[in-house]
Image 1: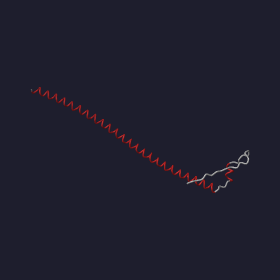
Image 2: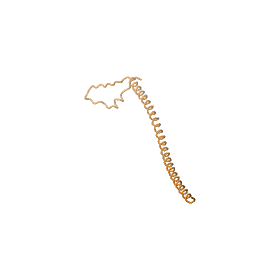
Image 3: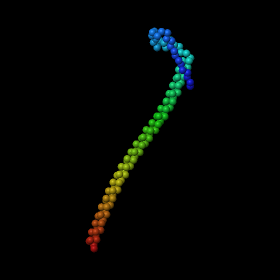
Image 4: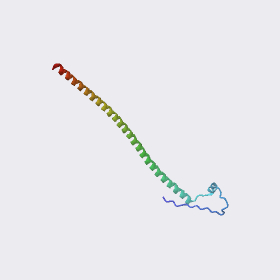
Length: 121
């Protein structure tokens, strides 16, 4: 929407005479159609800008919500990975302990075989 510029020019008859207060000057003014149209255009422009900013903020809001959701998922996945790493570490310890027990059993078995051979041969 195109809004023309509104120009206001004050008539200064005497530079030494102080101007009346702004409230008095505004109270005596009667807005012209041009001035009213100018402000209607300005309000319409501001409404358009406001709507555009609201849409932009909504876009940022959805992007931020998506980011927060993704960060929560990532945190959950990291927690799951940590727990799985802990479980893997625990299982590796169990496997190593089992291997040690098996080696001890093999050693005892070999000792028993040697004793058996010495007794019967």
